[in-house]
Length: 447
Image 1 (cartoon, rainbow, N blue to C red):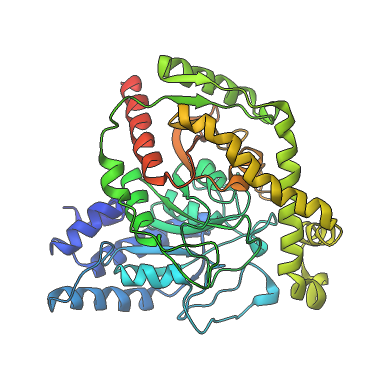
Image 2 (cartoon, rainbow, N blue to C red):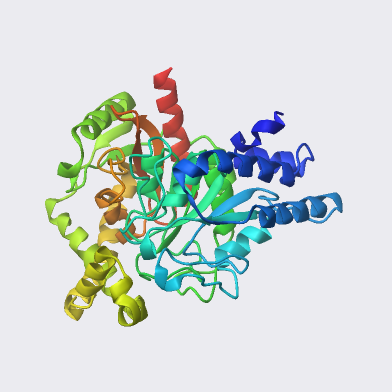
């Protein structure tokens, strides 16, 4: 094993090597830090990074292994944490000057879960302001003149740039799937309520999801399996048995999956090259992919998502509005202002439609294993003043269905062009299995 390029290891291979004593966690973390020193000046993915503290954690993991203490599935593996997720030993500033210097007194539930699984919390990755649209400093690793997407900008970029094998993000609209697509990595937004959100900046109880980034599907399954759980402080979680994501994702489907190619009512926003790329992809899949048209009336779902997001964000960021609105970006002030004007009847109507939408999708998912649709309108837009259009994510975030970005294609400019695979609620492991099948089909066709 080339110890000088341990940063290229997948999380799965790295965890296996650390557990087997082939490498140490300290060596692995040192390799990631070396990669960060090289790439960070251009990519700027990190909001907080203390290399010595990361190495202290790694040495502690190595000592645990040498002394025979139990090693978790992520033992010694470094993970990046979006800077809206509380960490007791590092600042959590939420991408806003209003929270500068904020140091929480306890870990978020997901951070505690990662530590329990043996992970090294490498540092805090850049988020957009309060996880909304105003960009942070991060640039796209494939071309620094282009956006990395948002709001989980640093998490996606750090994985894409090889700085860390795994990172945690969040999604209220398109904040995992879109940056994963723009940066060319796997991004997973699980079923709503599957991963606890306690200790994470609360924007919208209805729409907030924790998500993960990795360079392989196997790694998505590995970290995803560790984060599923019940937390009484998150009312949308529920007691459940551990979901065997790693095992299920590795299995062969009992039958070749049947996919529904869904353009959605916002297909007109897709770039011409995106439309052409999906035409080629669906043609290559042949009989295993069928076009499925959603009713045009479903266009209202984007309005429902907007009403819920703006109203709930206005309520949850009331303190920021009252104490420091003049220090917020124009984008965030506009959203909070609109949210304060949402009528109660419109908000309640939008909430009620979620169950109706999911009931309607039961028929779709009873026939099809997954939905295939774009992750974003196209490749990452040029410029660093915006993070791109989340329109192709809004419906699935509203419904709380699991979704994956698959880095399957590239645009004419050479930047990644993502495909989004969406599954039925609470069928997350099955979605990962279907995704592995799809990736293998595309790879085989490319050969």
